Image 1 (cartoon, rainbow, N blue to C red):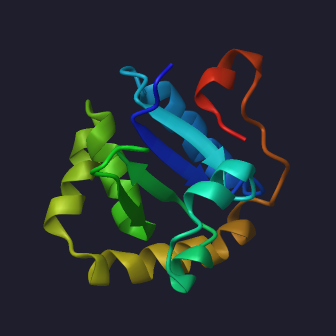
Image 2 (tube, rainbow, N blue to C red):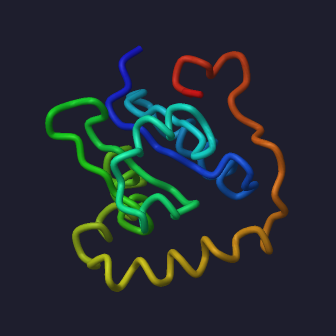
Length: 138
């Protein structure tokens, strides 16, 4: 299966697990792949990021993964762009990518990301199960 877009997530975060599970189920076109930030794929794919981006233990989206027009999104822009690309009802949230600039969305997203472990305790990654291996990278 060819992955068009790759979502990196914190594999030690319960909320991240839940969000990725929702994204996986909503991705009817099967255009997304997923990989934990703690894995081999992240080490290789994200090695050229800025130091600030490398410190982000939050969602990172690579749109057009391994293509010449590859683009990286972090924080709120990654979340909204992912919603836009999934389509369907998710498009409503995806509109925020076009309407709200990063300097508005990113502080709120970073605050949530820093405190997410207080909301749902960290746990080992619950995904993928054996049926999901084709879209989950190490």
